[in-house]
Image (tube, rainbow over all chains, first blue to last red; front, side, top):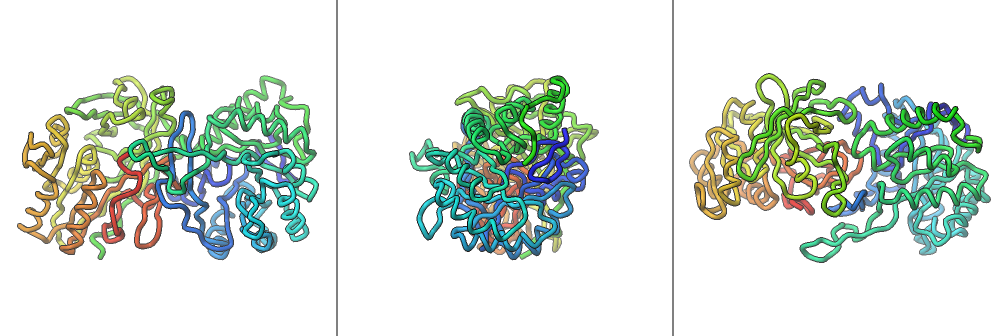
Length: 300
Length: 271
């Protein structure tokens, strides 16, 4: 099941979704067994921002039918401490490292991309564009023009692959994906979580500290399949697909819909080794179908 | 204010494993599940496990979906793990229905447990409701310690049988002291204040214990609860505010030194 993504060799097509697996915390909990049995073919970090962020006030979670709403708020140490403290630890992982970054202006994103561009430990960057540009008020990834402007700003800064994490909370996801490709994105990844909300049954007020959050898990699988299918058909660059993947067959569906690589997110919360199981299941399905999972070549 | 030496973290085997249930006992409103866990290490007192079953999902409101966090109640002589469960929602309902021969799906042990007493302080265990669980294994490991336990009513007060040397308070006065367990804590600390308090229970009880101990400069270790999706630091969902900012209860707790907290009223806990 070896494959590759933008020139990065992968032992199998299953990686993690950003923000759903903290390899540093997991190593504290599971020890070096985590490295010996690392469940993903590449590791995508949680979003890094320029300044430290404490994240949203709790409660941050709400269980839905077949899924989860999270309102985490991108807590992280900020770029300086990430480079000094986290990057050396993540470089010890036995798989390629992809760093997810987010900025509130094009300049911030450029600074982040520039900082990681110089680091050999980093195989690629993923751009989280699900946030408002404070200069325009528009969510970068919800508007094709914003997305294109961001890529034009940061593409010349680095030779590393740039993966644009698309938000499903856009009017026309395919238009945003095309804009990203035309402006130099190396790949797109989707879907991010879908905006959702829950009320406290006792008070009738919003349950989550951040009022709304993002829905993930099997509840969004059908939405993900439709968006991946539409985006992959419209693009020439590879698609990293995710959304409710729990089994090898779900990963196979996304590959048949056009994905080059599949990410596992919420299922890792239920079983930290889920990625390895899903990869094994996918390999078994591939063996049964003569390794011809898709007619689309798995490359950039 | 450091109340004790460094607490223990026993590493968990990587991934979720099946643990066969070998005994199910009922204590009033509570169910104790004992499972075999031949592939798992002996946990430290105060550590927890994420529990689910094969028949997860499809219950009330098409839940449960996520596993549920439970402190280990006791490590029986020989081998295995015991968990204390109260049926309060779709996840705990499914767990309470389990019978010997069925499997628990578990990840753990997780988190950091209790730290032993220092400065020759006497340990005082304070529990409320289903939160008495981690105090039982801790009482075993300490080789005995007095326990003050609060319950809503008589069916729940049957849980007091899980600990030795327990004084009980009930909200309705049906068993023991009619009132709050913190009344008993105040009495005990008045009698001999050179103590370290180990507490686990509902947020309001923990906050009352924290305030009481803080006012008397009595060290206390509180085993807190917060909604968790994963239990191993992945989701960042279980944070509680401390004097050093938000900490993830699953990897930096669930036992926290009360001096770190301005309040034990964790938003969303007890849901």
